[in-house]
Length: 208
Image (cartoon, rainbow, N blue to C red; front, side):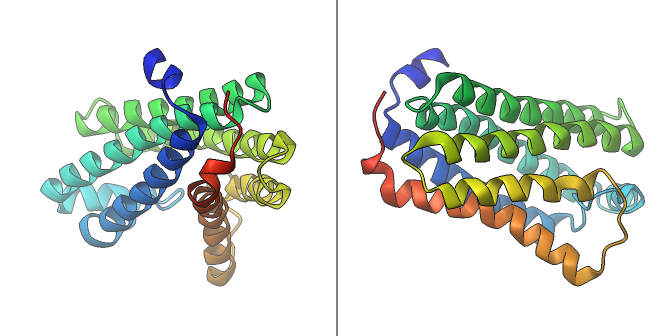
């Protein structure tokens, strides 16, 4: 792992972030829309339980899909460290650590659920902790991007705003459907725009 980070240039790390994020979006879309719909609906534990009971085999495929996504999240965290390190090593480290904590928390939760060590309610509680780490990660990432000096500040602001939208995972706000969709789009757009920017501008990033 240390060699992976050491040997990765900033431009290659930017490409890794972009490709890994876009790939994870594709996998999540396939899992949610074709394998196990509503698997990640915030707070909808009853739907999760019924999905597992009715679709045991598809649930297994869904778990594998989400494990791949979480593995990609861990890779993104490490690559972001390389991208942000030239600006500030401490902020880069905190950004990476929070994303890794999110990924490993949900990996543990998925394994525990798949092997019936915990029930869906236990899974929901652990998943909520994971989302706390992820919301903090997005906030710190936004601040690190804003302060970097070589990534547009507007992307940093968008990421910080997106970090606050994760409150929908922690509090049942009874939001209108349209507003809920808008919040989800804000979450996705913030990282997607950063990923696209990193791919396009990767050769202009400062090296360590």
